[in-house]
Amino acid sequence: MSVFIWLNDQLLKMVWLSNLVESFLILVGIDIETRFGASLNFFIYDVIKIFILLSVLIYTISYIQSYFPPERTRQILGKHKGIVARLFAALLGTVTPFCSCSSIPLFIGFTNAGLPIGVTFSFLISSPLVDLASVILLASIFNWTVALAYVVVGILLAVIGGTLISWLKMEKYVEGFVYDNPMVTLETEEMTRKDRMAFAKEQVIFIVNKVWIYVLIGVGIGAAIHNYIPESWISAVLGIDKWYSVPLATLVGVPMYADIFGTLPIASALVDKGVGLGTALAFMMAVTTLSLPSIILLKNVVKTKLLILFVAYCTFGIMLIGFMFNILMG
Image (cartoon, rainbow, N blue to C red):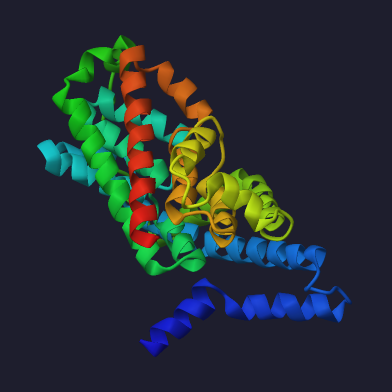
């Protein structure tokens, strides 16, 4: 256990990096006890830590993902039926580090390939909400209990959502062109180890280029919340004792567009200021699952009734999860 704690502190929380940044700031004459110094310390440490973890994790996950290209994923899902297929879809979503927008083309491809709509929606919910990189980052910021609980509730949300849509027989509310496009079955290309390493490197560069601005903005907001906004202000609006904190955080997060890696520092700073863990996670889940651009894209492939059902279900589910975390962790 002591070895695990040491590895967790040094590899995930990067205590050594925190000490190094503090020593550097003191060396150049910056007082880390002031608001500016503490904010600068928070910003430098979190940015470096997130990019180190992000690069290592995306490389590793992408190497694993190279074994599951879309065609192979479709073949795997096509072998199963019912709730088992929806569970597999949700689990496969966790190893595909796609944002809510980039998951939609796969949703179209899977639906066109004949996969049941419940299965495709389980994947659509799970893919942006739960991926291995975000789980490790959650553990580095909070702890493993929070990270693993987040995975479980995220997968349950995806499986139940797919089951509900399947039970309601919502296939008729998918736009016709999704079914009418000719499907081409491609042979799964075998990749060498060198190919997989090159693919993983490309994914690191692609994802870092895509999310770096959100990381900087998120850490900047987190630093400001942490050191400039009084705890009493935040508690007065989003305190764990406020019944409306979870719905408010969810509804504020829905129209936003950001990556989970940018919202994590904000969630961490909010929790440090007395906001309930469930409230912070509800905000984070709403931003990553129900971003406005993804809703606009989804509107082009499904009809209004199905879109409303999807948004309403995810919003209600996220609020329920937020309340649950607040009760259990409070």
